[in-house]
Image (cartoon, rainbow, N blue to C red; front, side, top):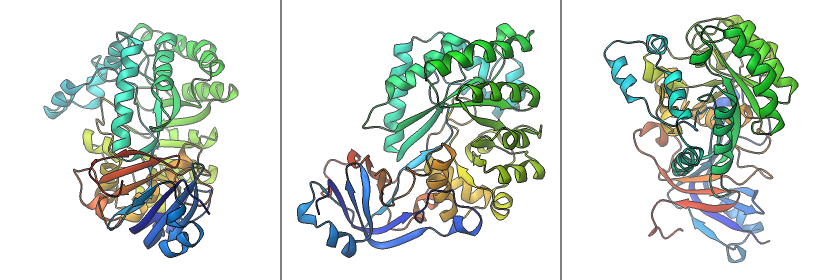
Length: 425
């Protein structure tokens, strides 16, 4: 049989076992690992993956339109980054300096910095300029092995500025780059002009912003920052349910700064994911387990802000589906590296390398509603995969501070290669 792309003789292939559901409990630490492996891609999908000898019996090398020699390298699914704030304008290194001098994240925000500083920068940036910046970031993500990225608005906090962010995401996306899954986060903070009228801003979100975003189909998900000093559980419930009624499935920034009951709210509204969870209660997390809400953990944020890490080990042992993401944003995590996020998951949250990999691929896909299409190298799944300069999957989180990606395949096509002189390409 003919293949469009045949990846041959990988030192190791890593993927979640066949299935569509997120991995939980002991299964999170039981990936499928194959030595001397191959992957055949046909019409943008995985046609076969396994031992090179078995795959090439069905898809001979001589009948492949393109062949990648993966000898000495790891082949794994492309990363799915399930939580980013990609369409931002300016950066906030001055706040990084302030925190180094003792200021806290909340103190900086109370003084008008933080998210509100990003809002002022975003509003002053032309849409074409913002689109160009997002496009550049997407190229960088691809080179880091991310083939799908969830990206939130939330730095506009007005209808026009939020739409500008979401339009920039749509305009910057390209078939040869990461897929973008857009989330409306108008409830990221209360903007300066509404500081004395919180309820007025909630009404604006519910009555004007959410309907407009939904009608224009600019986002798939609706998110709220439900935490101390931001939106209350009651406000968050109102906003999330308004979005859900308009077709924006709920997500939640939950209990990052304090336990305010956001994890339980995520379960109550049927959120596909609740993210951060640094201070989430046992009861809230167990409610998430019962609702099937994915816990998206963001160790880069705790690392940057000097906060306690989410209780990944506790969650895994109690059967919660756990994903790992970067939280790439200009304030609390200026890193888009999924490999670094995995390193922190292992070293700071006590996840095994295998658990971190599954959390960054199959479970991350489930956290954005794509568990049946992305994040696995299984028959019928979209052919999104990476070749890494490593012969063992554990090496990638172990050898941190560098990117090991050699080549990236998106929808069955080679879309990135690091060195032009690599004979395998």
